[in-house]
Length: 208
View 1 (cartoon, rainbow, N blue to C red):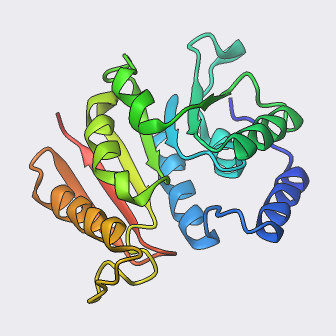
View 2 (tube, rainbow, N blue to C red; view 1 turned 135 degrees about the vertical axis):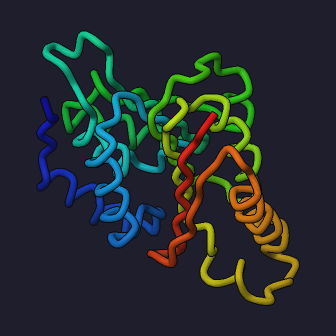
């Protein structure tokens, strides 16, 4: 069974986010991720960085759900910005997805280290503080199932990561994103690819 999500309501959420300069998934990146989710048919997704719930709502379309959701398929999504968390919660309610999307108000760097759901998730999507991507990756490898997929968005950071960028303002984020890319390429438990789609999407298949 596939969830039906109201596209008109989704479009309104997207439009409002853009008008208020809330960063949401770019269309090209979203299309790529939708193809991946369609192929995987995930039952459990972890999203690090909710924003206003736009991406989680779209991901919900691809959850593999049995009759009456007896197996408990869901998306858990983490957001540390209180204003955005409240808006995301309202959007999830408006879309009638409260049974399938679990919003968590927390700092993911702290929350994930205490999350006891090892080998639980089919897909983990990272789209939060760029300077913490290595923290998120290390926790994601623990929490994801073998054969699962870790997807990280914005890994090229508007061209700064693969260029010679060294300005102080974004230096830490750029350095950590470079570490992230080096790590997924060197880690023998990951089969990874970096795609120049949107602002850069890194895809890693986990082989524990």
